[in-house]
Length: 281
Image (cartoon, rainbow, N blue to C red):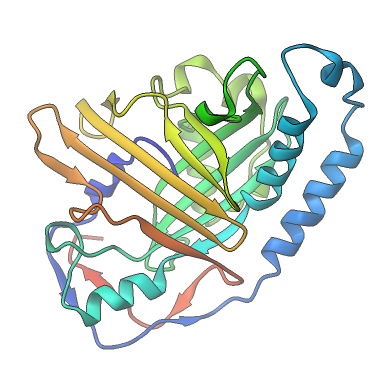
């Protein structure tokens, strides 16, 4: 869920309707496994007494952080939203509809809490359009909770790591993760940190500024990005948009409607895609 998503541009602007609906193909107990891993991680973590005693941290923020980590993992998919757009005659991009997107979040064991985010089209793990590494940490107590209780930094992946993940359909276990390599400063996407805060019964994430100017290696140019996210135990909504410095539309929903992904127990689909792209293989 990610800040620079200019990789959407690999998706062709020409789209057409297809008649076959998608069906779940692989059943997974992903959320239960995520929660079990979170419990093991908490049990194995060093005591936090010294951290809790420090003036820059407080217990309520750690509790919110643990709750966030237990939810920010697993599989999310906006199939129902994409089908609704198809029924309403709204193709993606300029048509005001949404591409069918699947997001797989996998916790990683690095020197700090981290999550691998793998995004792909049409329920096909072999067709990722974005892969990012997120690091997460509670913010200091002197920062207002209204301004964010959790800081998420966003990293691109090293080329060799991307290649291994693509060959393994995004399975994080295919990579020997290394903090020195994978959290290198040159991989950090500057200006795109997301700050999450609890709002009622869910978490809401925004960048520190209304937008950020980011260099896109894919386009070889500067782009202006915005990002607004919501996380519930059963859903992840992502409203990310990008445009050129001249205001030219690049990606995101033109009606400003988030990609509303529900938590699902599957990772891929059978059948033809909701929207068929016509790009070359």
